[in-house]
Amino acid sequence: MALPLRKPSPRFESDTVDDICTFLDDFSIEVTRPKLADLEAIRDSAGSGIRVYVSAIPTRPSAELVEQSAMARQCGLEPVPHIAVRNYTSRDELSTLIGRLSSEAGVRHVLIISGDRSDSAGPFNASIEIIESGMLQQHGISRVSIAGHPDGHPVVSGDVMQRALMAKVEAADQSGLTTDIVTQFGFDANAITRWVMKMRDLGIDCPVRIGLAGPTNLTTLLKYAQRCGVKASIGGITKHAGLVKNLFGVSAPDAIVRALASESATGALGDVAVHFFSFGGVAATSKWAAHAAKGRITLESDGFSVEP
Image 1 (cartoon, one colour):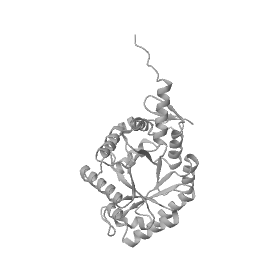
Image 2: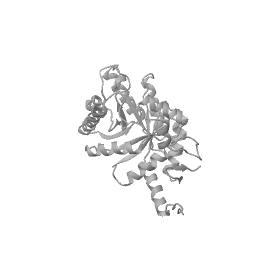
Image 3: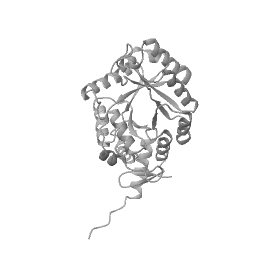
Image 4: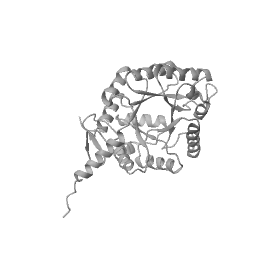
């Protein structure tokens, strides 16, 4: 006669919930062309001081990035605008933008990326050029985020990406900039864990913000995964994303959050936090993350549900 499955002890359940809360405590959110209502929703759900990474859109004027960052600051949030260096036609244009972000939005932290375009609009081709230029410090920027790709880059080889990442971290350190890494979103906790631990083995000990997709539907997840070069399939997303049954009724990253929280609790990953991409909407993402970070969850077989 088969014995009934043993339920986790209250101590085990408490530890798991505590691990999840700790792992999500300092989460950040990425937004694209946010409206005031979006930023207010983040503040109302998660409180002030949350880092809001503001995407740079090549087809939109850079003034929008300043306006959106200033709006985030006015809402009590910490704006971290993306600077896609290949989009700028001259050093003066980029310097003027960074100066406005600093003076008008109080920006002290930026994410530097090369940008998606294959050719450069001006003199800059790689993000390390800006890190080494001294331009950021001239405008009061003291912290820089660098992009990481646990699933690899759709165009650049893994070895080249690894060397470039190490060079950028070293350049930022030598320039007196505080550094962290923000990764592209992924769906495989094991792959993310291996990548972070490899970075640690290489001597990269700066904080890592692990990119995860916030609550949304499977069609939207696959669309963004294909666009961003993230390895994904319906089966893989279903396996690693889980399903929120109560609050939203859509795919959410509860299973991968729980797996990474457990790994993080061992100390093996070093200084890590979570960075949510708000594909399903800013309000839904911030509300889900804030509820989970406060422990308003019900544990399930491999993930959890967020309580209403």
